[in-house]
Structure formats: structure tokens, C-alpha cells
Image (spheres, rainbow, N blue to C red):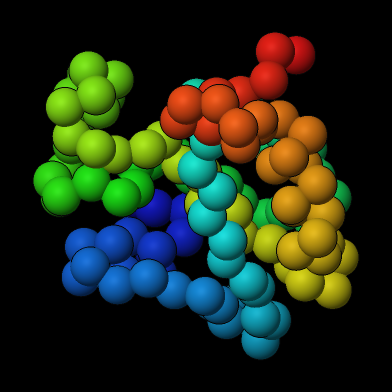
Length: 115
């Protein structure tokens, strides 16, 4: 049921992954948090070499917060996007450029820039 079951298992076990090997190929993982995750996720989905994205929450103490809890500001979580990418086709620097092209790190909660 999950496109990348390794991520689901790691999440349920409270683990963080940096790489995943699938079909003899190594993929890297990177997580970016900044403002609303929907626009940021779409930006990453358009980057060549990005194989998969997923959204969720990071940095808060609750293990399974919902959208309303996070948006209320009560949990301390930040909306985030995890990116699975092929390092042969996409550099981490390109992912950073995408992030900083969408997010203003000087605003509260790293709000996304209007596009």
C-alpha cells in the first residue's frame, strides 16, 4: 500500500533513513520543512531526478499529530516534505536551491514565498 514501504517501516519504528537501495540502485533521502508543505512538495516533484515525495510533520513531541493540531500551533511540529532522489541525476545542492527558491527562512515558520 505504500510506494516506498521502507519509509513507512522506518517511520513506525521511529527511525530516520538517509539512503534506500531499490532494485540495485541507491537513492538518497532529504527532508525539508518550511511553511505549507503542498507547494514545496509540488516544487520537488518537478525536479528531474526526484523519484518520490511525501508530506508530514517533524520536530514535535506527538507521534501521530493531525493537520488541525499542527495548524493550531499547539504541537510544535513543522510541515515537512521528504524527498527520495537519485544522486546521479539530482544533486543535494539543486534540492537546496529549490527549497530556498520557495521558502523564506527569515520568516516565522519559514513561510513559503508567494508563487
